[in-house]
Length: 150
Image 1: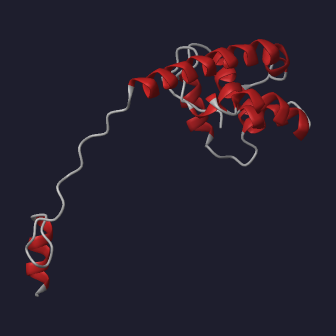
Image 2 (image 1 turned 180 degrees about the vertical axis):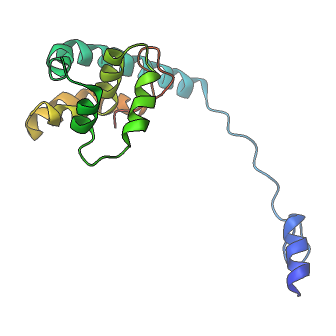
């Protein structure tokens, strides 16, 4: 079979024998139980995030008081990626720079805890409650960005 014939058959959804092949699969419809579980896990993730913020807020924000945004960027991104301009653009998406820092704390929990000099054992203990619900994407504050913990 020539290459031209092969391409034409492929574009029309047929194999080398001209057969149409398998029909398309029906769209996936999750069950009501699955939808309820997803909703429950997302709600649990939001609640755990609020508890995490209330626990670490003062210590986290205390590290960045009276510090320029560029110095915050250097502290949060020691390898220079993302760039400073990207960091500024991301911070403008939040209502305030403080809310952006709290979003960063929640979206990068293990890295934030390392910046706050927690031990690896303490980090794993604090992230243990997020083991199951942390896979579900949530938002924080007025930002449209979603994140997962795990």
